[in-house]
Length: 158
Image 1 (cartoon, rainbow, N blue to C red):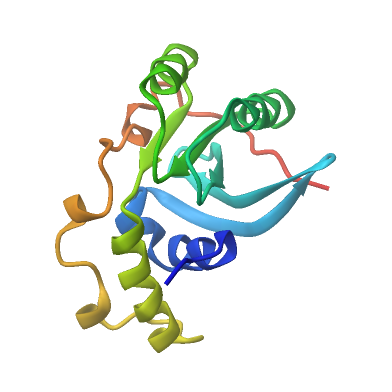
Image 2 (cartoon, helix red, strand yellow):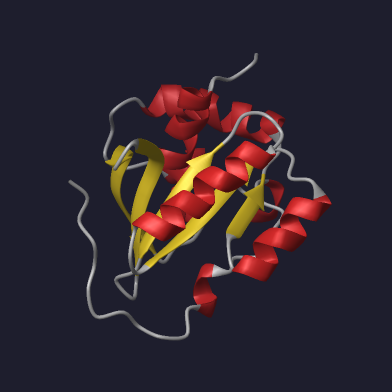
């Protein structure tokens, strides 16, 4: 099965605590930010906006520009790119500029998508459906815990 970006987004919407960070609260999906549309919007435990862009294909230079735009538009935020393949040179650039990233296994996300379909619109996810081993789903350590300065305000998107 070849998942669409929307289906990948479905997985990350349901399993973001397991796949990204337990310190996040989902605020929105397909959030309009000026002339862009971010896949997922979270707020972390310090009140900082976290903008997540998901990609189904390997990351390109255009994707980097999109993340930089989010960082420039949304005050008091962190931006994150999540994709199956992120070239080493882009990872180095992201680390230099403080952009978070994660890589994922498409086959593991496909397994989780099957579980998302089973869950449907339930508000409580049965424990038997959750990933057993978090390390199977992400390859980059959680950098969200490194936020050193709590923020006083949050940005709302209009």
